[in-house]
Length: 229
Image (cartoon, rainbow, N blue to C red; front, top):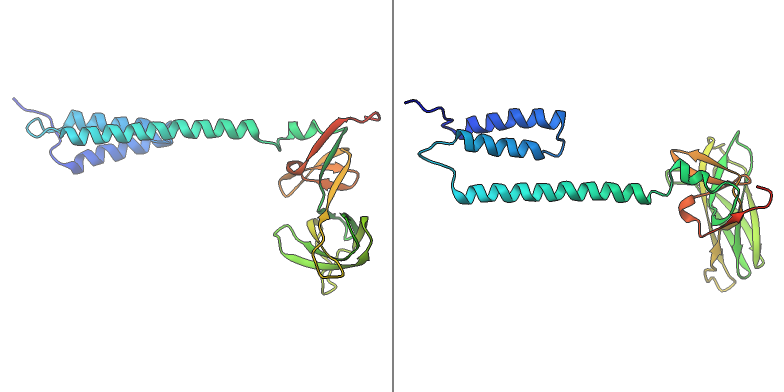
């Protein structure tokens, strides 16, 4: 009586590789079904005179158990990410008409026109403002001079430190405040107001308060809709 069998590990691997590739492409990107296909193929084609060792079989079952756990962990992580994502278009639209407070250190340069930023300091200080492009590279410096405690505005003419006009787009600023003793003074760039719209810059969503941009992930307070909304 003849016995159909695969007599070498190379043939088993060939069956596994062929079936695994097909499974991964069509329906099982994580390889769960492909792993079972391999295991069944090994059991089906093993040499009856030299069956798979129990230890080897147990080890492969343990690998499948680990794979199954990773599959479930990945599903859970995707569900969590979907649940907590703060910047979906629907969520951003919910802010329109409401009073919010958030960090405002973004500048939007359009038609190379002068743009304005804002900051608040708690005591008298000398001010230096650094402007950064969307890659985080410093491109310009604005000397603010000495300012008293309170909220102040500054203007940037859209040129770099060499006088060259910068391209339209999104920029950010950082305010350095130093007192007369050369000690750093805390700077607040929070902005409060009614959200009038939503805009997208470089794939990221921002809330519009007038012509100012507020990153929704920095919002610290949300009030009721204003009476005018």
